[in-house]
Every structure is written in structure tokens, then in C-alpha cells.
Image (cartoon, rainbow, N blue to C red; front, side, top):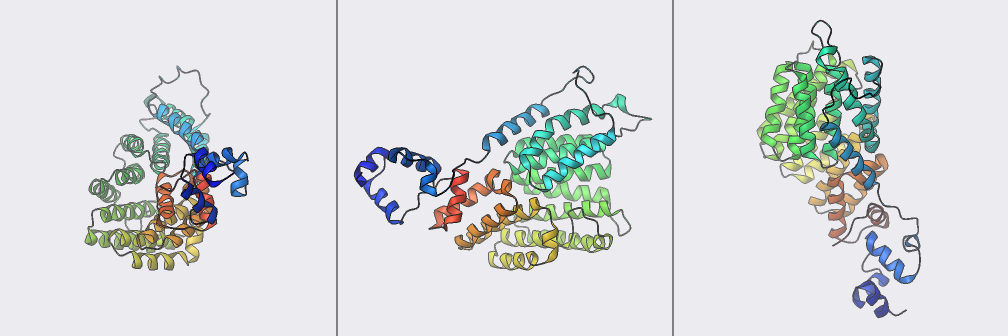
Length: 380
């Protein structure tokens, strides 16, 4: 088959075919690979040296829609005929399992669990279930709404995440600790919606209500520290360097106090250091941001962070490398993130956008191209 015949069959120019054959242009878009394979009468895997599989986008999309339906469902308690968990303790265990899955970046698994958890916790937290005016499941409902919002933010569903976070804030009912728990995903959703000032205000207000002090419970110190870190990331979006510095200094102080308790709750100086790198990049100094990132990730504390946190940070740093003009390092950084937590790279729109930008920036190593092919991204 001549180059011209193949070009005609796939709707491309002879020059394009010639460049692919000579390796000047990479065949890295899955639909085009399938088109060329069909024209040649071979399986797609023959062209890439492995079995080609599309990312489980359909599974994630279906799961998100079920979560959307769950958030829009207002069943009358006890009228649904469904079997509820036998106790708040059982619910607490199920929510803890879902949280662990999230920390390991098993996002589709978490999404599949959420509709049932939302229904069960709303049932348990209904007013008539209260004892002496106390709603024992209210904390659990805040936690489920929080988890729902955090997963949705990652998958590019910021408006739906905002809804879930707002439900968490309403459920918190002005309780300082519940409000702080709910404020974390609220700030993340607002930041995803480019509402940086609102995000900063929400975080700092929640910290003020929590009123952390050196003798506060470790969980409260961690919550306040996470909120201050989130507030700093939000302040960087509108280039308020002074506020960023102040918030990170306060977060670092709480992290130092919190370190004495050695609690494994995902907060510590390493979290503040990583945020420092990202805010530095957002404020315009990419090279210093990369130095801060390299220093932070060379510590043992980096390895102890949840897989979700490490992969998410690497995706953000890949964008920094790209902005610094180093698309090869950006591609390698995405590969490392994919090795740590594949769902972070293969399901998140922000990762797809960064990988697409890497492909557009110039020739890429075969393993980066292969990752893009598996996901189904295109170079245009």
C-alpha cells in the first residue's frame, strides 16, 4: 500500500503519513490509531505494541451521575423500604473505609459507595433520631458530604461539589469543629470555581471559630492547619503575596505544635511545604517553586503522605515544569503521579489538560505518549 493510498483511506495527507513513518510525528491519538489500524487490517495493539484500553471514563461518569441523583433525592425516612445500617458505629466504619479508599485515590470505588452512604447517614441524622436533643449522626453526615465534595472537585464537578459542601456547612449547624470539617471541601470547591477571595474568607472564618491553641486537641490543630493551607492556596490565585505568607506562617506554626502528637491525619509541615511550592509558582516564580518542591519531596515525610495527596501535588508540579519550559520533566512527573495513583492522572480533567499541553510542547518519550494513548488524549 502506497503512502497516498493509506492517506486517502484515513483522510490525511501523504505528508502526514510520511512524517509518521519516519518518526517525525508521533501517532499518539487513540481514535487515529484505530483508524490507521482499520485501514491496514490489523489490531490497534499492533501499532503500539500492547493491548489498547480506554480509560474507565464511562464508569466514573456513571458513578458521578448516581451521586448527583443521590444529592437530589429527598426520600421520606422509613418510607423507602431499604435496610439501613444497624448502628451509628457501623456507619462510622463504612465511612472510614470510604475515606481510606479516597486516600489511596480509588475514586471510582468511592463514588460507587457515596449514594448509599448519603442515604444512610441522612436517615440516621434525621431529627427524630436525636436523643436528648443530640444528633449523634450529624458528624457522620458532615463527613460524607465532605468526602462527596472532595471527590467531585477532583473530577471537575466543581458546582456539584459546592452543593455537597454547602450541605455539609448546613448540617454543621454552627458547631465549630463540624464547620471546620465542612469548610475544607467548601474552600476547595470555591477555589476550583475561581472564587479565591470567597475561599480565603470561608477558610479563615472557620479557623477563627475553631480558635486553635497549643493545648487544643490534635484533630483541631490539624483541621485549622489544613484550612490555613487551603486559604493560602486560594489567596495565591489573586496574587496576594502578603496574605499567602501570613497564612503559611500560621499553618507552619500549627504544624510544628501538631508534630509533637505524631498523629497520622494527613497534616504536618510537609503539607505546608508543598503548599509553599505551589503558591510560589502561582505568584510567578516557577524555578523557586521547583526548588521548594524538590526539597520537600526528598524527605521521609513525603513518602508517608497518602497516595492521593502525592499524586495530586505532582500533577500540579507538572504544570509548573511546563510553565518553566521543561515539558520533558513535566511528562516524567505525570508518569510518576500515574505510578503512585493512576486514577489521579487518568480520571482528572486537570491532569488531562496538562498531559495534552505536554504533547503539544514537542516530541515526548514513548512512555509519556503511551500514557496519553491509554487515556485517549490527542495532540492537536
